[in-house]
Image (cartoon, rainbow, N blue to C red; front, side, top):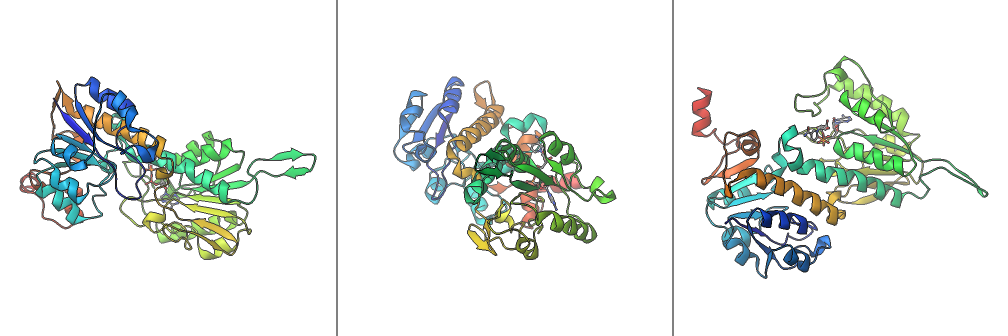
Length: 389
Ligand code: NAD
């Protein structure tokens, strides 16, 4: 029987890696579930719901983890949790693999097989395990809700006896998962939407959600998408043309939601200080790229500021502000992932499988992930060297 343990997250993390629904699913798979008391509290899911779903409630994290074959978390394990893990145990969470070499080496030295959920490949069969998509969706929604809350005007057009209110104009920069959800949300709230992206595929998606697509559609634009569906870093010439187009457009917008990212690079700077200064007082910018340096030159990471009458919000990780649904979706993603590894009631890691290979970061005492080894300039593993020969 597989023992799965889920514990409370650290300070500032509101989500939890298990929901009552996924606890039931694990139970049906024949697993034993150890759930730390209060772990669901910040997601508005009390212990009783987990108990009813068949989980055992354990007071102490170390007690839960020391018995576990599988430890599921949203973020990284604490020092105490790490110490309690059994050698050979499986750990899965959003461990921010490029964020701390020490953290990874600590997991490796415990002999844990650790999986980074943010490394899930963007392939059709891994869609149900894609935590970046599920959390970005909620972040895109919350960005619009937050923008509306900071906006001193109304969003929808209103025709009343006391006069007509025009619909607010919202511009979404970066039409990936978060951007498309922001467009859909803003549309439902009655705003007039425009959006930009450097990937041509985004054009049709924006139009299908009722937004106007604004972009420099030159030869470079036609080639701007990688095989994995992500954006490429654009040339300086393209950036200049894009900046001119954006500058004239932004001056007439009430709200700008920015979500533009390029994997492994700092966020592209799309909104200059001059562009912010061209906006009307009372306008709002929500910069979802704040954690990676921000799409707006004025953005201050983790803060809300006001510059020239424009409110600029640079809060991190907006999905954590919708913890109930963020946890439910995350828990579903991680359950789909774990179920994928269980065959005949036993955990079986097929190391040749693309999903396992992409997400597995530490195993057998070593950091085994090729992307991570390259990032930290670690020499390729012996097996990789042999393959390269
Ligand atoms: P992301 O978070 O890396 O970036 C957000 C958006 O910013 C992207 O659309 C990107 O093109 C855009 N961007 C980058 N530089 C820009 C610039 N200079 N100006 C304007 N926009 C810029 O991307 P994401 O949301 O993770 O999604 C990337 C792609 O992957 C999308 O096409 C998405 O539909 C696709 N996807 C596929 C799957 C799957 O098949 N399983 C799952 C999730 C996402």
